[in-house]
Image (cartoon, rainbow, N blue to C red):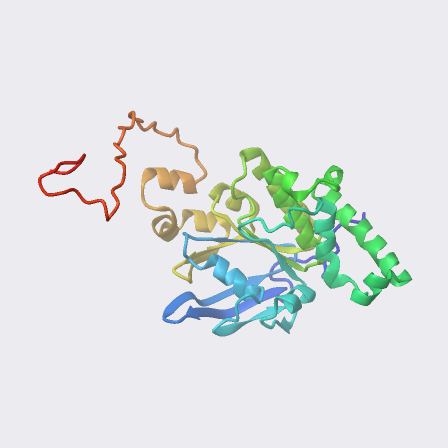
Length: 315
């Protein structure tokens, strides 16, 4: 059965073949600050790998190194046997796509047009053909439109093709970003906090979509703060703390590692319950009526009180 996604490599099992994506001792420094320190990671076809860690741990910086937005201070990134350069365009052409923490859609374009933009790196005709509307361009545009519609249906947005991106619900905008990334025909898909701001139903839909993408043969790497989501989703999890890999292993191994509980979640009972996926009843915090603070009219520097006079707030 055909799928909307056209992975650049056949599926496989971690450990059976060479890794599809390999980060080899990647370090990224900004002046005297080391944001990523000697991070190594391997990702295999049909594998979902999670990156967790507190804010400022270096997760997104590491993604930026993988995708060419940053040139690592040292180390290298290898995709399907080829060392990647620091050119984001060449990284996409090589077969790696990503989404971002903040939605980066073309808000005044339709959902279909947004996905068609993602197909640009796989087209052959150029600007002159587009201006002259040459036959080759028309044929390629029709194929791009059909492929983009197929991808919208794949992510569950087939009926929203002609809707402006800005008018879509938040969860649908997230899925549209994923569809646009898939339009580049990646071998590896990087998702930076794909469920941020989602309600539980949207989070479940995102989980199902990522499994669906994995089943087409792609490898997926996910940054996320939702522990329950990560541990249900991933085959392996890496925990980054202060730019270094603290723990790597299966979700069960990482979930039970006391270093993760202490460094990432904390040592309180509520934190340990969160890491274990429990749902303790939250305690209600009293919300006293706030006191009104007086808002005196500000004084101008040139409007000082004369000697012996009094104003509001002056003694």
